[in-house]
Length: 205
Ligand code: TMP
Image (cartoon, rainbow, N blue to C red):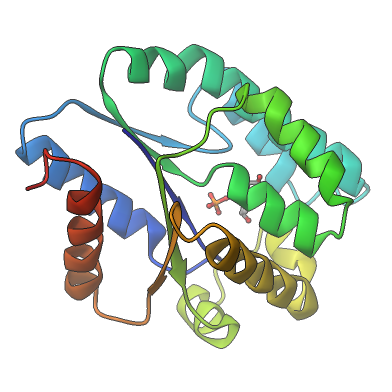
C-alpha cells in the first residue's frame, strides 16, 4: 500500500506521518517513511536547490523539472522496490503537491504538470492521499517566524491558489484524495486517519 500526505506548511503532516508509521509498524507490517522531494542523496541535493532562498532567479518551469527529477530518482530507486517487497510506503508529499504548487500556485499549464508527473512516476499513484486542510491564517500562526524557504516566500495569493488546488483534487478524485479537517487535535486527527487507512486495507483492522 502506498499512502501520501498533502497540505500546506503547518498542517501537521510531519506529526501525522510519524504517528501513522508507528501505528502500521505496531500492526506488524514493514513500513517505509519517505519525503518528496528527498530521501535519496540525489533527491536531497535537489531539495536543497529548490528550497534555497539564494535561487531567487529559478523559473517556474525549472522548478517543475527539478521537483520531477527528485521524484523520479526516489520512485525508481526507493518506492517501487519497497512496494514490490510488500512494504507499506508513506510519502510526505507526492504528485498532488506538484499539481497544487506548480499547477495552481505557479499557474503552469496543467498538461505540462501531468506530463512531468507521468515521467517522474511511470504512472505510479498513491492508493490513498490524505490532504490535511487548514486555513492560510492558521498556517501562518503555526509557522510563526521560522525562517521561510524559497517556496514559503511566495506570498498569500500563491498559497490561496495552492489550497484551492488541493480542494479541487479532493473534489475531483474523492476515492483517492481524502480531505481532513486538520484544525482538530493531533489525537483526533490520527484516529480519523487510522479509520480511513483501515477502510483501505486489512492490516489496520
Ligand atoms: P515540505 O515543506 O513538505 O518539506 O516540502 C517542501 C516544499 O516544496 C513545500 O513548500 C512544498 C513544495 N513542493 C512543491 O512546490 N512541489 C512539489 O512537487 C513538492 C513535492 C513540494
